[in-house]
Length: 251
Ligand code: ADP
Image 1: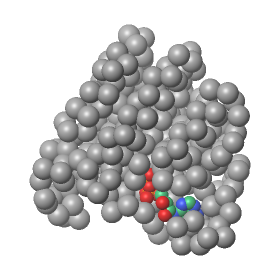
Image 2: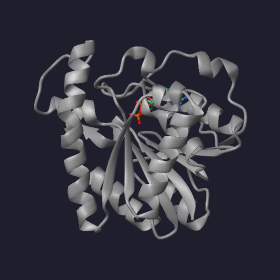
Image 3: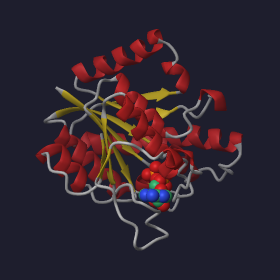
């Protein structure tokens, strides 16, 4: 079975410091449909924002962020579990840091865990382990983590669901005349060096980390689709009907 990694960011999953339940349900429903064709691995953000619903700490401080992530991780997973239960889908939680891929041996261990889940029809839900890791051990955002996961698990494609329709020639939230790139095979050097510009206060990546993820996958001969996570029709038509309607395809 073909594999697909779906990455969803805080911008889609949270709304005013709370889990955006309806959007999460739409995502879960899509994943349930995808599982008829694909083995699916989900990479999700949202733990820090979910933690903020019970614990008002300053997420810009290291301890604050870790404490929020620790409080939020079970909230996030409970929210997912409730929704995946509707579709009778069992899930597993995998928390990772960059160190988990620092040797062939450790990468292989990760691959075997994912294989074990997928052969038993369990949906692995991956997130960066912000809780005990040091800055050196962190990817810093799930965009690059999801790219490494897609490569390590031999996925056909990584689909990044964000709050925009794709990659534009300039920030669409600032420029009305921004134009979307339909496909891209070479990321401009300069774009990879730009400062990150997350849209949402809980987002960490912005567009730059998404481009870095795309760059990594292109170099490894894999594909990535950056598309809208509010309206999942672009992701669905691409994955289920092989139609590229909207979203930027990196390949
Ligand atoms: P997520 O939580 O989904 O990872 P981010 O807020 O980190 O989302 O990243 C997406 C944001 O990147 C967009 O909402 C947009 O404001 C910003 N952005 C900056 N430049 C661009 C660009 N050229 N094309 C698309 N988005 C851009």
